[in-house]
Length: 434
Image (cartoon, rainbow, N blue to C red; front, top):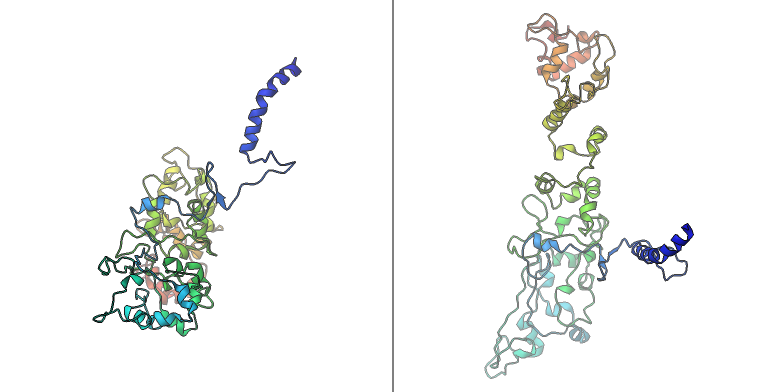
């Protein structure tokens, strides 16, 4: 009976099994081939074209508002010209024959385009055109009316770049090093301008500086200006190319940036300040990716080992102390949430009776700033104060035997007498280390 039931069920189960295996990536058409692992370099949609991980999310433009065409470094240009670089180079012309001022240029905003008088040296006088000379504006200009007048001029907004042609030429760089081979290029556009990969060939930290601010403009704080101040509709400067720093802001960067920021905080500080991180991580609705759901049970390990900078988001003086007091980890006998006083922050015997080994004494001498995160001076004086004062303590001296006549006493007293006055009165003869 069970065998018959299985045979009746098999025709219904088999199609669903095939669909399930296909969804897992099994290649059912291969002869015994193992399942293919998902690609780590591309993200494929439902029947769409493979998309590289380094592609910037489409929400970037929506985040910064409407933007016009062009890149964050090279704004869109309008070149109503007709020109063939390959034809001119085939005649044996040098780049500086037309770009006459490029070897003296010290700024990226310099318009190093050929001037009309330079073209007249080969094409005849047109700038200005002598009387009786026929107009040949249509030879180079594409926007010309019936009477031969030019209707549109060249428009090239200044790039968001710091570059010195004269310095690079002096160091031995050639035009092909940055602009590539122009023998097959007609009218040059922003596609022939240097890309980041071209610059990093020399700016590797050895041949030339690898500091981002050497090429990208910076603001008053020294960070990179990710938005153009004179043209707010230009795209934002977002790193997209893969590099040794691993800071490509791709589709997976929202998940990976925590490890990158911990490994190299100075890299993030090149563009972002603390307020940028706090706007996301300290908002009313904090992302769940900051800490794991049960992080409260393991955060003591990170806090003790200093593997995370807790003070980037939390005030250790108030946030940590307030939580520990409410949960019963502080000096209170019972927490506000009923956890109980048995869950103490310090281990048992941390501060024992006078004359017994004291664990807290070694920690206070090593880093008393950590003690001050929770305790005030009154807490220390409550135990270490002498017994013949208005509010007597335990009369436990924090100094070892023979401290009053030691060289250490005189050294500490001469260095900072104010620390001694926390416990000793100004007329106390022990202040003189005797």
